[in-house]
Image (cartoon, rainbow, N blue to C red):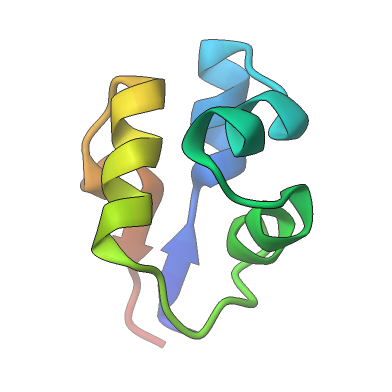
Amino acid sequence: MPIIVNLDVMMAKRKISSMELAERIGITSANLSILKTGKAKAVRFSTLEKICEELDCQPGDILEFRKE
């Protein structure tokens, strides 16, 4: 898949756990895990906005496009 999710990298930089981030942004830890592993088919802009707000980052810090 050409979209790479670097959420785990950003979380490590900000020293925040999956449980804590999921709680802060209002989604289940299972859904956050699906997003982190790149298995999600879509992400709501509202969820992306909350993630960026909590991690103090830009969407491009989390999502990356690579040609196959």
